[in-house]
Image (cartoon, rainbow, N blue to C red; front, side, top):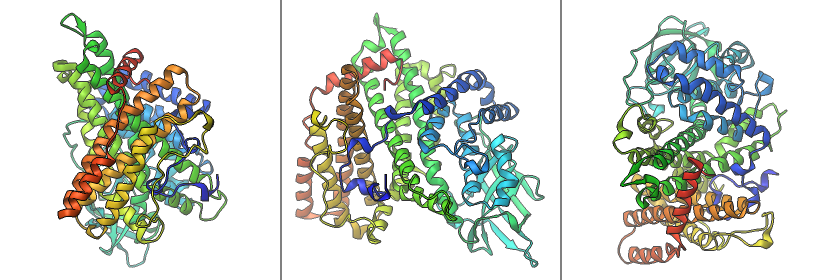
Length: 587
């Protein structure tokens, strides 16, 4: 596919897209499925049996498990071939992260190693730096850590106080400062540390644990993810050789932001995996536990919970792999032999920074909802440590905080859209409007017609209203309440579109039963997401518009949000039965 045929970041708001251009979980190749099975087997055989010990912060055991993971080649997935890696696609990378996701502490520790612990070196390191450090990281001989956050700057990393002072002879930098909440701190060997050269130029450095002046603080006593190491990294006159500068002086923000884009997407995959596991616990328990002489699964109150959990997960999974497919398609257009390949590569990732932020918010919120309902289905037993849902519930909470808080990501979405509009990359202020119906030109069997006619019409109306409010409120871009509401509208649109496109495409080759299931989950997702969109649009309008214009917009919103959902109760009951029969997520 040529670059001109690819959607730009944020362009989903301007036009509908055909189903065949969308990557879905139904498109996994046999190789991808095999890697997923290998990862799942490792998790079931190596991690879950020792998870209780890992949760007690047995770091020796954690390191052993990390090296076993490396022995399977799972640390090589994102590493380029010319660096000894497998250089697999982003879809495969997300699939591996998803399968490790249910392990909680191990998932975050290993993700810290393969993602933010290694990728800065991969993308920005010199040949000498890669030769010196990368094989140690990919083999598990060394563990990596990413030192960005500071005690007084979490969501605003560019206000960092850690300094780097170049020596008189230019041979080294002297680093001073404190980094906060550093994952893998207790046993990391290589730290990617962000500091300001001369107190001004935000930059990154590769700092070895053995360098004099580096120390690690006490372990934080956390609510969840108890098996991970989280501590301060303290730098007191640490002398770092000049050749350990990562990238260029003053360009640390590019390293931080671009690595975080992939980090957000990988976190999204991790939480989808955890949500699937939590749903499995809930569905199994509901099928076994009896009250009033019946299983919990036979009660409408429980069936509705299982259906809503399934519908949210379907939307999360759909948008996750849609974005991974978008990244793969754009990366495939790059010239691998170009001297600036990694610069182009980062540009391809940066293109979909907004979509990565959407995934982070939606998927982490989905896990929050699923874990909460899974515990509720367990009743009092869900509050007891011996039941896995207790851990899923505790571990879930921090996902809405790290890799950029969900509030920061919700603000980032409209901010990026405004920036791209101002630069002329997107025409969100123009006359372009979303199509009233989905284009079927790219579908495998367009003659069969399109599922979700009412839902696609709803989606197109939502896009039109978004564009109207986006343009009307653009002059109030400094007001966070308005930006948050616009961000939530965009998230709802992307999630709904991803669900409908997946259902349409995948149903073409599905059995009659599976096609019916796709139709049911599409209706459930549309009902839920349209309610979220309406609530967010109402907030945006009420915050930014007054008088008669507000009344006009509110009337328009009521018309746009009209959704004649058919057989919603039956659709939910079908999803609940499917989840029960599957013992969890049925797709």
